[in-house]
Amino acid sequence: MKLHISTLIAAAIAAGLGTSVAAQEKVVLYHWFEYIPQDLLDKFTAETGIDVVMDTYDSNEALLASLKAGAIGEYDIAFPGDYMVEIMSNQDLVGEFSSDELSNFDNIQDQWLNVEFDPGRKHSIPYQWGTTSFTVNRDVYQGDINSLAILFDAPDELKGKINMLDAQNDVLALASIYLDIPQCTQDRDQLKSLNALLQEAKGDWVSMNSDTTKDILVSGDVAASMIWNGFGARARMEGANIEYAFPKEGYIVWMDNGVLLKDAPNRANALKFLDFLLVPENIAAVSNYARYDAGVKGAKDEMEDSLRTQPEMNAPEDGNGVFVKVCDAETQAVYDQIWTNVKK
Image (cartoon, rainbow, N blue to C red; front, top):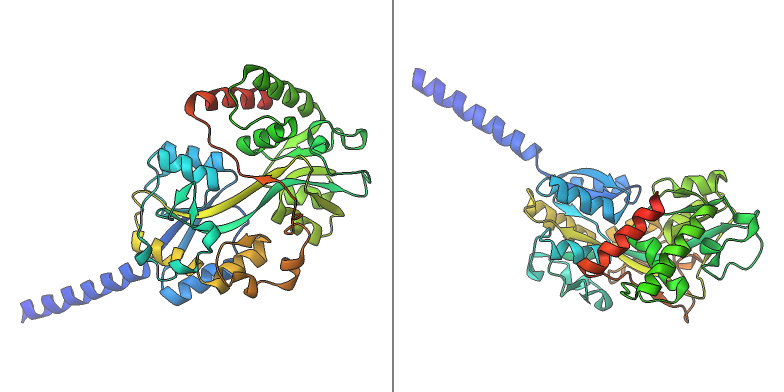
């Protein structure tokens, strides 16, 4: 009888533990700040029973530094930009999956399938894409904003009122575009010119800030800011009298991607979350919130009309957007030093 009672107790404890384990099913995201609606995370949990745990970062470089410092193995999915996917892959920080592990894999738009940074999408799915340029407060400056000179040779009205993103690769890429020199150049004279331009220009910048860019535009604390197009749209929608520029010299095109991380502790749940994001209705919810485009078939049909028509999303047909390039290690070391000089 005692054995029978003990068996029942053991069974009850086991059942209780089983319930506890089930309740602890989770997926752990490392995500950009202020980018995904909580309602969508709640929807995923309601559909799957999997809790979503999320930490945030404010730049691709911060993401990489954190993972290299030991965070790899703590997170299941991160959302790096295009060039950072390639860097993370080169540094063995990404996991791998096959297309048949995602039931919605065929929803990926053809143009975002065989991308240079992840050919065939073995490590990532497309998430959101957009452009990086700048906005100008039209109450402060009414002149032509169709040039990167706004950032790098500022008109008097904007001097001391410009915010730049605290994002090394993006800032250096825009400066290179302005100088009409190749990204990842090894030409010493071009590198000297790049360094000199940034040293001169930073005297007109009041801050280098990524995580409150929208807020300081809305508050009027800055009159111009380098910015992602979706953040620019949200600042405008919150009352800032700003205009987003597609400068004649060029601008950055980027794509953030949902990446399965190496040694993801909840791999199966991570794949369920990635598959969830490939449903048009779901990824469109991210777009409606963040004000960016998506790389999923049918997503546009689910987006708000105001998003499809917003000026920040509609680059001119003859625009010359470019992706940020990944430099070799030797060249990157020079660019790192230039950035260190900027931040002094």
